[in-house]
Amino acid sequence: MKKQLSYILILISAVFTYGQVTLEMSNVKDQKVNQRFTLTVLLEISGENMEQQTPLQMPDFSKFDIIGTASERNTIILDAKKGDVINQLIYQIVLAPKQTGRIKIGSALVTVNGKIYKTEPFDINIRDNEKVNSVADFSDRNDIYLNLEIEDKVVYKNEPTIAILRAYSRNYDNFRKVGKIHFPQQRNANIKPVSFAKSEIESKSGLASQIIGVFMIFPSETGTVEINPISATFTSAAKANKISSNKVHLNVKKLPVGMPQHFKNAVGQFNIDLLHLRSEEIPEINKPLNIILKVTGSGNLASLHLPKILNSPDYIFFEPKITAQTVAKKNGLTGSRIAEYVVVPKKSGPVTIKFEDFSFFDPEQKKYIDLGSKELMINVKTPAQIADAKTTLERVNDYTNTVLETVNTPVLQTTNFKIKDKEKINWKVVAGNLTLLASSIMLFLFVLQRREKKKSLKPVLISKSTTTIAETEEVIRKNLSNHFEESIEYLKILKDNKDFTNFFMAYDELNRLTKEHHYANTEADFRTFLEQNKGRQVLEQYRVLCEQIQIEKYAPFHSDDQMDDLYNSIQTLYSEINK
Picture 1 (tube, rainbow, N blue to C red):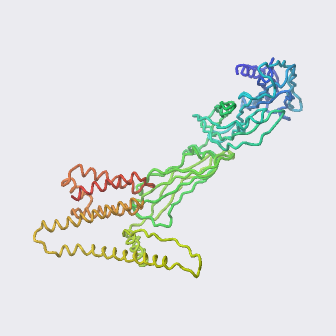
Picture 2 (cartoon, helix red, strand yellow; picture 1 turned 135 degrees about the vertical axis):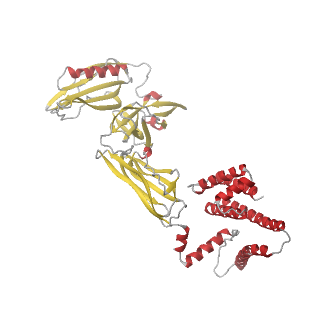
Picture 3 (spheres, rainbow, N blue to C red; picture 1 turned 90 degrees about the vertical axis):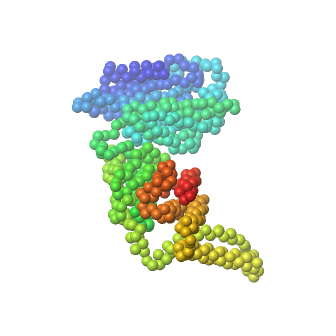
């Protein structure tokens, strides 16, 4: 490594001793067969009127195995006003001699402004390597090499660039022994795999190569960013060895000036949409809404900072659930990134839900695109307004649905049967199903009849003559106890069936009836009753339970453990209150 650096420094120093075009090649001394060495070529062209007319032509390397190549271009500005600019190309090639003896390395050529420039040829003395018995013997891990190649080494911050991991070997059998590719996690760059599919094996000058991985690199810092080697396992003789690629450097440019004030880190091409998930439903005050913010396009979607919802007294919101659906392509991650918010409107009438401004930098157009802020206007109504807007038929349907939801009707188990012949029907099965259907209808009518009796129970108790006030209170307490047990059992059924909407509605009904029983017209009166009659501990338990109810009621997802804990808290607390 020190040798290579010294060669590069010697070549760079030649800029100040030669004219406007400098072309130099590092001189390599004696080598051994199959011993790798690096050959460095430096091309520098200074002056704004100097035009390179031909690509850099390398000498004949047919007597060498080409292990890998790498190049780097730099532009050095000496004086911007005078136009003094140096265009620099550093080309490196890793070679391994195939045979012993003296081998001549010819000249590298380039044509600039009609003039041909070339390097001086030199000879290399190749000695025999005693440790290697045969040139074609490639049995250990040093006979396969990994090389990381980057298509575009000059990018903007957060702009993606494609990296290709290629394996080189003279033995085709070595390629199938390579597996378990591991790419590093580093602070100044994000690496995303695009594909681990192996390409067709290519062969050139006796050396075969195969692409074994494609990656996408997102640099997160400006300046020179070093990408750490990518490693893979190589299984030889039932033993797994680790092989690593070379390091590569990226020249990460700063984003140009003039960025919008609200710009964060979006680099690529994006669109943004805002929508109400259930737009067919009428927004109701104090009822949750699902608001979706969706960013689509290509670029650094994985690290993109999504615009956030703005605070407002007209609504409250909870932390969003972030999901992504992306596919890695050459121009970046393509797809969408979604933020799903739960928003609860706190007033009726027109309510505008606003989000932060969003802008991005387009590296193709090299300019910033400002999409502004997104907002969604909804018309929130009260329960009374929604009820008044319904037709008579809709009200009847709502009442019927409410009755069916609150009735604990058993699930009917039907029998699947197959008619083998149209003329031969299994009448026993048909009769059994009809009997089961009739039984279910009778059970449903019986449940409705019991419900009507329960509704008429309260007037009967009031009209019943009791000898003392204590006896009357005992009857009312017993009726409340029965109702409480039924409500708790109903909550358990709704919880087990994961019907959480009706679960919270049933809890509200239980809470309302408990307040009425204790003659509490408002929430403040009920809390005063709890503090005076049940103690501060019960009051604190009730306050904590109310907070848990509000959190779970408007949460986008409910876990089984959280709902079990909530149900147990309701059962314990209301058993204590209704003693």
